[in-house]
Length: 67
Ligand code: SF4
Image (cartoon, rainbow, N blue to C red; front, side, top):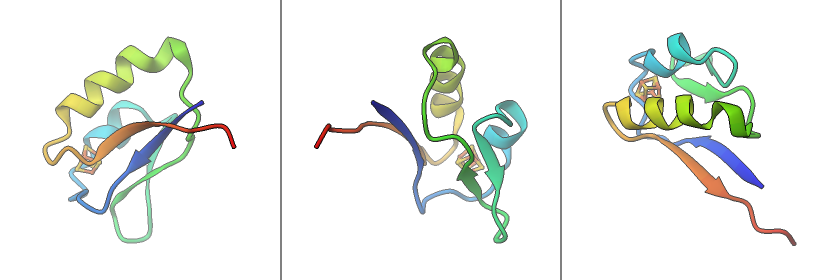
């Protein structure tokens, strides 16, 4: 399963939150945090666009290994 993550590099520009409210929200520090970790196949293109647009490259999709 693929999981969405935002790293500490986030500077809180708000781009991902404004473009994909389904997946991102602001935390108490005004930085992006992941609202929905699970990546839906139909949203992948939009997510990849946002990942490319993030000015600090803070968003990643990680492949979660089955235990
Ligand atoms: S686009 Fe990147 S820097 Fe901007 S809020 Fe989202 S994760 Fe943070």
